[in-house]
Amino acid sequence: DQLRRELVSNVSHDLRTPLASMHGYVETLLIKNDELSSEQRREYLEIARKHTQRLGELIGDLFELSKLDSASIHPSLEAFSLAELLHDTVSEFGLDAKKRDIDLAIEAPEEPSIVYADIGLLQRVLENLIRNALKFTPSGGKISIRLEKKPGAVAVAIEDTGCGIAEEDIEHVFDRFYRAENATQESTNNAGLGLAIVRKILDLHGSRITVSSQVEKGTCFQFDLPTKAAA
Image 1: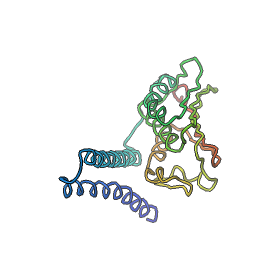
Image 2 (image 1 turned 90 degrees about the vertical axis):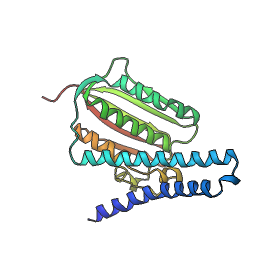
Image 3 (image 1 turned 60 degrees about the vertical axis):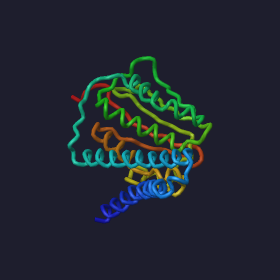
Image 4 (image 1 turned 120 degrees about the vertical axis):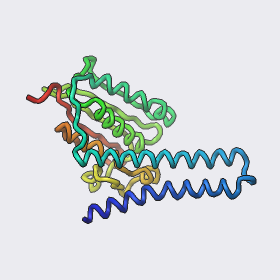
């Protein structure tokens, strides 16, 4: 009951904040429309659009986590090249990383690195982890995504040179809506369900994700994926 009350409280906060901001800017547009320049109107609309996007992402995450919790998602396992999926996924973030002067690097064997998993769900895992790394990595930093072949598996590591996580916070990073004490204002405003979804998806694959971190030095998330179907 306590956990449920905390979750409802956090969800309410994360929904209410962008909604209140949107309401304020739209109300200003209605009341002061004739007094605003075209540049001001565009600025207010852009801010309102940003908050609608945040709301949409949060609601989408809530629906996805709800389905994962209810066991209504069953992985469609198949063999595919993890290296190829990784390159495709990283390309989605290339422009954002370049704008923020963050080096987004892939270190993978030349071989295809075939794994046996749900390709759609694994893409979601990679997207969430890379997005999380970008959120906490300052300009001039680096994010490395490494693949390493192991007996019967491919190891994945996503490491950044960001602000890091305090030792007392590490065990909570996969909790829903958890906010670390050293979180920046931007990351606090965007705290949510991304890492909780990552852990749920990897749980469905029988894979355990681990995290190691040092404050002001960076963080590394690691997990393994099997190279063939379980017997």
